[in-house]
Amino acid sequence: MGGGALADHWIENHKRDSWRKQAKASGYRARSAFKLKQIQERFGLIRIGDTVLDVGCHPGGWAQVAVELVGPEGHVVGVDLEPCQEVEGAVLLTGDITDPLTQQRVLDELNGEKLNVIVSDISPDITGKWDMDQSVAMTLVADVFDFSLPLLKKGGAFTTKLFQGIGVQELIDAVKPHFSSVRRYSPDASRNSSSEVYLICRNHMPWNSPKESIRERYEAAVDVLVGGGEIEDAPEPVTPTFKVRRRKSE
Ligand SMILES: C[S@@+](CC[C@H](N)C(=O)[O-])C[C@H]1O[C@@H](n2cnc3c(N)ncnc32)[C@H](O)[C@@H]1O
Image (tube, helix red, strand yellow):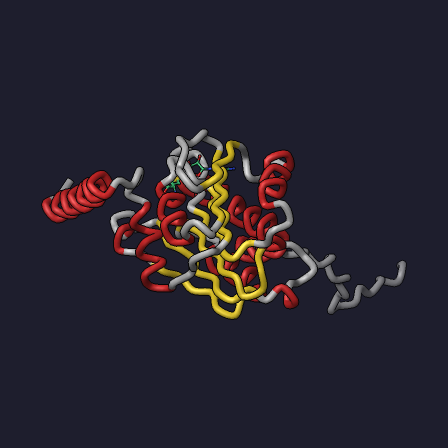
């Protein structure tokens, strides 16, 4: 590692440690709690009394922040593959958000109540093959949108983590018709991870939802981007530009 890269690496580790120490001192379970706090400071998505769905909630940092923000009148439901230690004031379910059984448990917990805000910090297991991991993560986010958007109130907000790479703009384009404002934001607490960015979607417009799902529109756009959506034309019939004259038989 060269001198410059070494210094950058040191600064990154130092920042990460600093957020970790702050998280410990403040009683949050994860330094990621500061990311949601910073998103909230900037955009004010969550209000007192709100009903919030927290997708990918383990170990519970965002759930802690959400409970503080909604207060005793609010309702926070979280879901993660990993079981979470209890967070007072939140209901944290264990399961895969793409699994219909888990989805039904979320619906049961909401009992017909609509959501004011969806927050998703979901990230799938990393295999180390960046392109594949990033593409799996993007599809997962599209699935989270498709499951949870019908539960979101008119005017509601949605924030989700994305990993930079192929398809980010395509996903943003697929999400845009659903909200009056969709923008990217990098909280300071996540700047040490240059690969992640948060999408801040505000003012849900359910009446404007296209017929096809977000995943379908996202995948179709990515197919075009990588060339898989091209349909090859049948070869044109070739008209010869010369004539063959038959020799008269001698
Ligand atoms: C970065 S962590 C979330 C941290 C959390 N926001 C906090 O502040 O404590 C991402 C989580 O997404 C979860 N996850 C990944 N795929 C999932 C899936 N299909 N369904 C539910 N959770 C999932 C992982 O288990 C992991 O705990």
